[in-house]
Amino acid sequence: MSDAGAPIETEKKNQTLPDPNPPNLLPSSSDLKENIKAYPKIIGYVFAVAPGMILFGFDGVIVSTLVAVPVFKEHYGDLFGTEYIIPAMWLSLWTAASPIGIMIGAMVAGWIQEKLGRRLSLIIGAVVGIVGIGTCFGSNYAGALQVMRGIFLLGKLIEGACTGMVACTTQTYASEIVPHVLHGAVFATFPAFILLGQLVAAGVLASQLQMETPRGYLTAIAVQWVFSLIVIALTMILPESPTWLVRQNRMESALASEQRLQKATIDCTQLINDIAATLEQEKLDTLHQRPATLFECFQGRNRWRTLIVIFGNILPQLFGLTLLGNASYFLQLLGLDAHRSISLLQVGIAIGLVANLIGIWTIGKFNSTMLMFSTLAASGILFLGISIAGFWYGVVPLWWTAVSFVLIIFIAGLGVWPASVLIASQASSLRLRGKTQAIGWLVQGLNTGVFSIVLPYIYNPDAGNARGKTAFLFVGLCFISVLLTWLYVPEMKGRSAANIDALFERGVPARKWGTYTVDGEAAAVEFQAKTSMSRESVVD
Image (cartoon, rainbow, N blue to C red; front, side, top):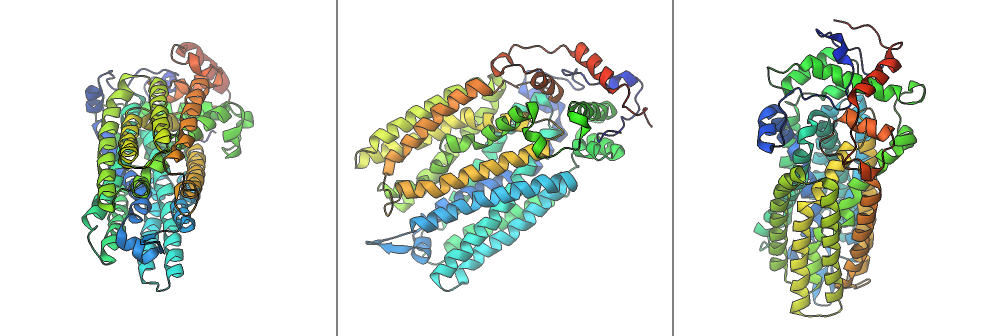
């Protein structure tokens, strides 16, 4: 018996065979509004897991924003000339701690969500976050400066593990419950939720900026507890992923979970049978029907799929998100005062949030790969302008850099950022999805950690002092990303999981996916031949 479980009995037993491009069981339309109306419960549950991405965004910007707060720099920094700064070593360590924690959290989540389910993985991740936030909060009371810095570093590492677990599991869960007709729209909201978390963090700190006591930055740290508790509370009401339940052979539980996700008029039995059939086909496509392993993610066609997931996860760093996230501190190094730098950060985040909301429409309207080409190229050109401006000093280069940062986050929000989440969520097979997502988030954490460690040594005044010329790095990375997208990233928009499986198995080149049509009948016959001797009889 396969790990997908035996199908649930239906009136027509031949319906248990998968069609790589199956007919929609619910009304499907190119109109986003109609598709949202068709899946109201699923949309609601996606919003229920959104606080996890908000927490991810909050944590991602808290260090870069805290180090721009004068009282925090006074308590945790060193006097450099007439001003306090955070030493490059500690700035690098603090900024890198979160992505390193994300690496750890992602790998732990890859195991937990496969063994215990998506819901428990979210809850455990949020509990870890509560511990990490408490550690950062308590660092203020440690006494000795080096001890304070070390405890804050430990807290950021634990918080990173939390966000890695929560974000990785959230993406896996959403990719399994959201129908393919809504993939683009739903995953385009994830960067928006991340930016919302960043906006909340910047707003909280801006409101405390004039405070001359630790209360200002401690308030910003403590606010994260609220989001962790919200994640725990909302996860309690979530239905477990039907795909995970089918893999555990818990067919009745899977059916009950699917019924909570769909309207009462929908044939949920057929949906569960389709999931079971797709999982079984994926298992039969592997050598000797072995249990799923991390190593399998890099075998055969799965290697291409895993590399696409990795590429999607690291794209935000390649178009400069780590540098943009440190904009408030970076612009202070160019001469902007603390109040204006944080205000500008808020404006940039708000504009990015608007762009990502518009991105929900652009992802649905245009091909994701085309959006990636155009927005990566535009971002590269803007980074080139920042690099050239970096050879001069004064007000004009400062504001050229500031405005360019805002434009880059707006342009990325329209295309490459939401598209990167979409391709990372779609490319893996259902059978290996949890493990592949864990690998993707592991590499994302590693990549972010490298950038977080290296960048301060490039631009900080007590190290490389490169200032705006730092942007030359991202000019090259943006255009390299354009080339990699063209060569290796297929257009998966509007395709079901079974359809995507079929195209990868046939080795269709990335550039031909947009026009390639899968023969559903031939694929179903092929699957029937494969499984005729291995399937157990249909059970009640």
